[in-house]
Length: 213
Image 1 (cartoon, rainbow, N blue to C red):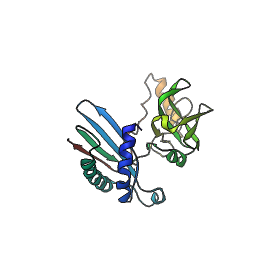
Image 2 (cartoon, rainbow, N blue to C red):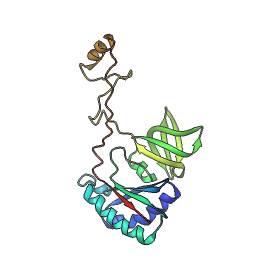
Image 3 (cartoon, rainbow, N blue to C red):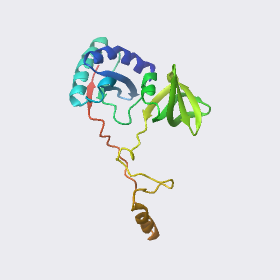
Image 4 (cartoon, rainbow, N blue to C red):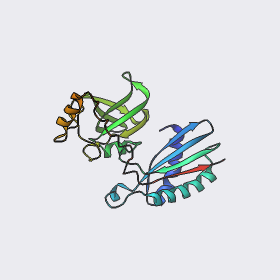
């Protein structure tokens, strides 16, 4: 997160907690004509199996934090407030969040390059204090959380049943599908484009509200 996002997240976290929810983190994006403040909320980890974030929770958080932002006034100028559930490709902001999803794959953008990299993708191996260790191309790659600009989980869409499994050549690996693909290619036709499930079914709640200074 940026310094501004960290500041706002620390300011609003107690308000969100008072509603029985966790503020995972914030994104603060500036642009000509106004900024965007995006808050990601979730139910406490212990309640994840029995509760989920929906539009009602997003509305409640938006209402409470809007009032607090009006009083505290940490953002000058116009901005848009977005309150959202994390979704399957959830963003990761803190060391404890990386530790929670150890073993899963994450896509990471760095603030400062490391070993010539500004971006990386790999499985989260472990968390050592404020360092996250990834498996990147078969080698360990350690990154300080403070140097992570942005990170998100990379869902296994095929395992979730939201995209067809693929073999090493990128073909549909479902039974009976490979032969069909070969016949199509032999006829000189390009194989059908793989569906990209961008509509995340886990993102059950998102609320956007514009605010003016």
